[in-house]
Length: 118
Image (cartoon, rainbow, N blue to C red; front, side, top):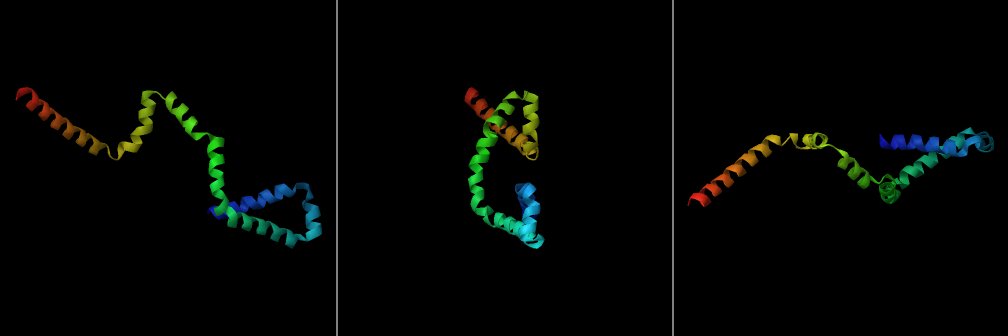
């Protein structure tokens, strides 16, 4: 579950953020309030996620530079490797593609036959 994982990571992040001040925070707040504070922070992250996730797309796109990375990697592929990437995408429809190609070839052949010998 995504939200369970987000909650767990939020709690771990809060623990790391507090760092060496954890004993002081527990002494000041008490263990129960400290645990509740971490849960509250995790809940606020989960509640606000839908409103802030859109802002991450631009940053993620820029930081990962996926378009250029994919372009560079695809250009480095040999023809055989490129076929290996594309083949699984068309494997399901391969027989249909072969049949359509055959039918189109026949149609073009008949057009040429009548155009040349009529």
